[in-house]
Image 1: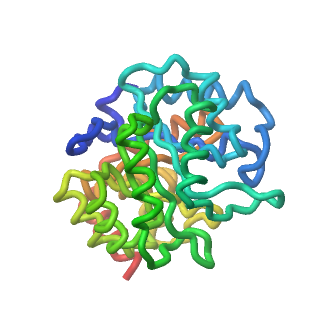
Image 2 (image 1 turned 120 degrees about the vertical axis):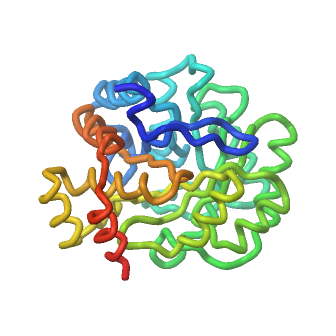
Length: 291
């Protein structure tokens, strides 16, 4: 499998060129994204297999584990190739109960950036997303100004500790506010066949040459349950998850995917979704799911 089979490349304006099918490292930590994995060697193998298959961007966070996924990434892939882009997140930490409380003061953000630098073993972080929202469900935007925390990250970018910035779990107003402070290269929000609130945001970002990365493209901790998706997948003779990923790649050229797994076999099943050519009828059926 080569770069050309992974959905093509999206050239971010004033940012990196990313293969559209990436890899999300969240599942490399232990259960509930806490502690070490059951099989560290298998986790290392998944990362190396992803890069060998042509993946050139990996999504992580120092609060996965905490520190676990970053340390495994460093073990598996350092020294990093010039064309490998590691995207991390700040704005949250983990508490003793495994919760995800916000930590967005300028001091806390500086500490998190320094921790990411140490655990990944780099002098500058390629892309840093500010995790903005969360809300009652843990993954929806919460309105409000992000000037102070995003401004703190913009200062770290000016200092050379961060190359590019993005936001995660942010609404349209927060995205505009971030862009008024410093350039952004990506937005990472909740979006999939059944959850489509960001349609206008995706179109606007595409016009601006900015990537959009849907987290939980397969439903996350609550896997997608769709009779339409299952029917389309059965007709195509493909796994429902592969069809859901292929639909996202068809949706807009600036959508980049980061499906995660701790299995090499499952990794290649996910990557194969980029080769799935959905016919117009199937796309229309899937487009109608959210309606």
